[in-house]
Image 1 (spheres, rainbow, N blue to C red):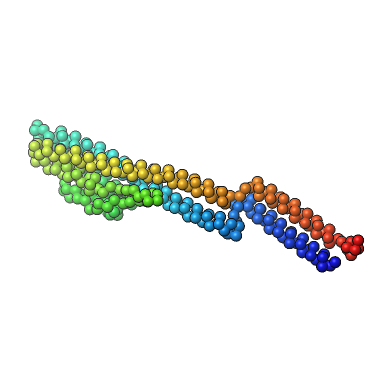
Image 2: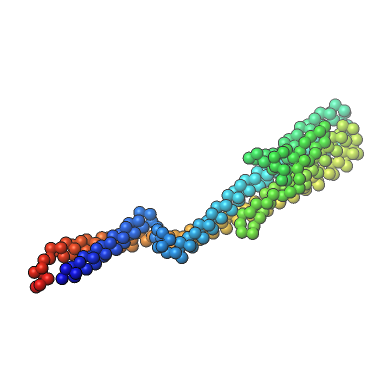
Length: 291
């Protein structure tokens, strides 16, 4: 009979231990909101969670790249808009000088105005953001344009820096300064030379160069606009991807709090009943077993 009593105790203790473990598991699920607390809870689910977290990290990386690239692209677009206005102003002032009735002093004053505008254009072409020259190609640590007399030289390169904003989607982050501003600076240099020489015929010929200069700036703005649109589109795709990934993550990982609370209370009730049964067994004596 003692063997039977010992077996009864062992069964009760084993049952109580299992119930206590279930209560602890349910309690952790309630406190953390997570259904999977360890790899043992669901090996396949845990493996998928690792994959999902890796994909979410990739989304964050693409989003960070897109935000950074979008900032540079947007700033460059704005600068080119200002550059277009400056070049147009230089053309307008040059057109005014292409007449025969300007005396030397007036032409000198006009040349001074044009140089001031040229210096504004030079400042725009040497714009920086976060320590990077925007129109230097890949040589972002040094000013791409330098001025010697009235001659502007380009020291950057033709590299267009690319950024990854999605799987297999790379977009341009910059436009080279030489192809964007080169024609404009050449036109201004020729304009100043003709203006100071008082060569009206040369002035008229030089003014024709400005259409090409403005076309180059416009083409660069179009390139940047395409990049900007691609970055924005990729950002929307990454947002949608993140939503889908987090939804799947929630399905695998998130605990049903109502169900976990119910399970915890149910196991607590069963545990209390087990303790009561254990106490009852402990009160039995030899005569109870002989009855």
